[in-house]
Image (cartoon, rainbow, N blue to C red; front, side, top):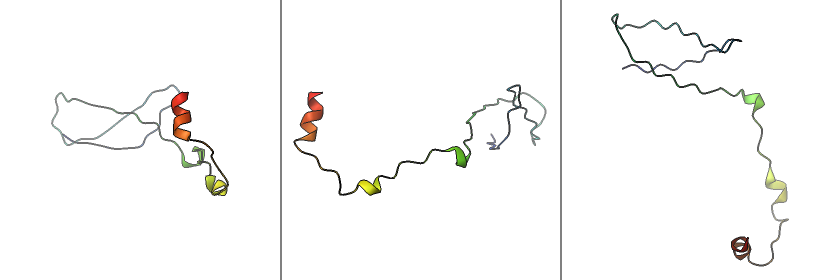
Length: 70
């Protein structure tokens, strides 16, 4: 068994074309394909920076008891 990892592009018609040379003898093989969409780094949303709220928040009463009531 051989595991291959590669990055490729799906064409405008939604097809994925693979042309992979192997060292295997001619015959039947099992192929497993896992498609995992790549997310470009610039399109990822950045997490909100809560550091400016440190020390400014205060809570009164018992927060756990309040959650149990709802």
